[in-house]
Length: 162
View 1 (cartoon, rainbow, N blue to C red):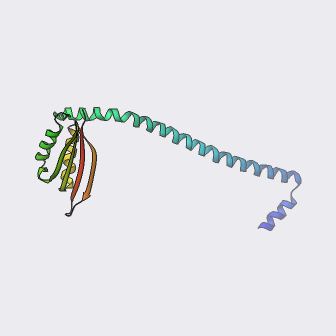
View 2: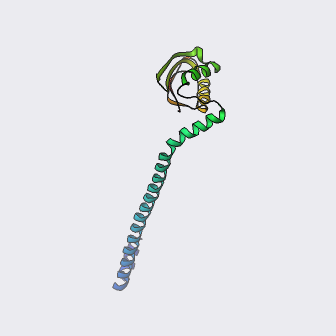
View 3: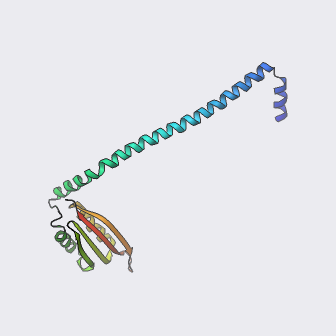
């Protein structure tokens, strides 16, 4: 095959050889241009998406508090920093989690830290979800596996929205 191509090349006139070399160079340059242009276009698209996501991220934090407040007002009961400790204790008792509570500390005006031992994970998460509907933010949640299946030891930090 290589020999046939070399024979064909030798039979061509110099004008035809120059034309084929020029066409080859043109095709190579066009391929390089298309590669550079497509990568530039992809980079521009990624940068545009990044800017949109950064704007969305900047918009979200102030709106989260408003959403939580509106949800809690729809529920009728709003947990504020003034009544956070009492409401957490009451809702924990209603959920049947009081006897599994190891420690309960009021850290700041609107922060409460709790530690549970051998609590059923599903019950704990359901209770935290119910609290979030009332305007409580889960600032920190650390759970480690307990001895029994489905149970965890958990450390939780809660805060009121307002």
